[in-house]
Length: 593
Ligand code: OXD
Ligand code: MN
Image (cartoon, rainbow, N blue to C red; front, side, top):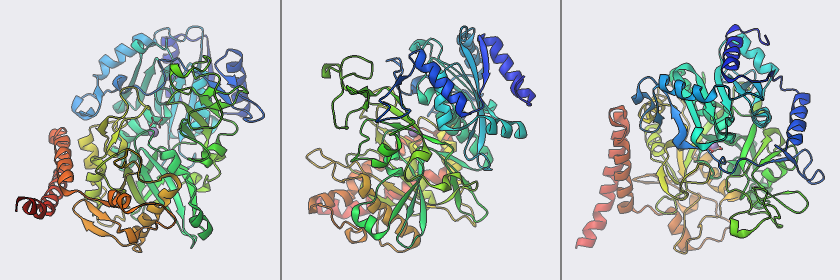
């Protein structure tokens, strides 16, 4: 018996009876334990050591080629009433789901070690944090969980004190896509995942707990679990504003969380502080503001596209003590991916590199690394009370229509803006890439309950006495007629963040349009950028007729939530539709006349 908590011991016993492991190991999270796991994985070929001179303590893991991303069609939310999971989730009745997945778990750990991984999502002494225990038969998962969460003895002590924890059962099973399921039982605060070793499916603290189960728990407890980075922007006066920003997977959250200010800004004294790059838990404080923690302790970032020009801070972060998954190798065993200088000799599957086989690194190749290694890591990431959020930013990949930035009129309009978010799909999930889909608050794959109820939960924060963040929408991905991105992005995104913060403090100007407030070109610092008049017109245009079609489409999307859709959101959509119709009327009259 390894814990003082009877319910935990009982559950571990039950799982061991079902899965029949050869041994059970309770993880303490120590350095020795981590080293032993790494050595074992090096011996059995799970990890390949990288060049110790250029990348000390770095390892390459090659996953099964069919197990490289999240599998949304195999990810289920199992509530008693299917309507509680909503049209945004795949659903199965809890009893059927348990029966189906337990049959796959039966005897699956024979010949393997069962690891008990106690973890805390968030600073160990924060009241906003929540704990869980993952049982897994994958040492790779244990090593990744140690980087991504506060894992081990202190988490176990908190679990024993609190007596509650989220139960996560994971096995790589046979790594067979036909025997793969990621199941969530929010009413039981439990997760069962089999058949995949990929981060988003297997590191159960991340998407499964911190977002799907977390969002469900947050609704009943009055807080928000969101797919957002948290970044601190320090102005030359030394004031830091914290911004939480939701973008779909692989749309640059990691880059924005650790951006390097353009030269003029650096010289003026602007600084950027990284709190988190993927998940944000926010709760109302006594002062009425929303206070946020990053429940994670590490980054599980997309490698391709990360380079000295796009994200030098990430490059510095991953220069040591990093686990790389599905990257390519150079002749001297350095990790390599598209966007880096040099040439690969071995591709992500371990084959001699041949461009005929596709990219050298898998497009969803990843690095796992402690957040503390980031040069811009903020001590405030450990603050028990979290950081106060000044602004919430939504964004997606929108090659047309959507301007560089706009501000919602108020909280309810901001909830509509978040609910209406759309983006082109990326390689972070299996399926077609580059298809536009609605991804409300970037939570489509992660909201653990009916989106209609989730929108109502968001609206419920608008209470007397609340000092809520202002809400904005950005689009770094607008393309010109030549098919190229119009906005330079990366460090220059600070120009947009400066305006956003200026709006929060009342210092920055804006013009009202039917879709919200937009900066005039004078309101944004564009000094030193080479943007011609055409580019500026594209970035700031609001085409009323095209937006009317968009808002009608948003209306149809909202309809799909039936009677769970809050009336207030429908009213907001109609308000924007009416404002657009009014704005478009003179244009239509002129055309007719
Ligand atoms: C991630 C994702 O890994 O969103 O963060 O897929
Ligand atoms: Mn993510």
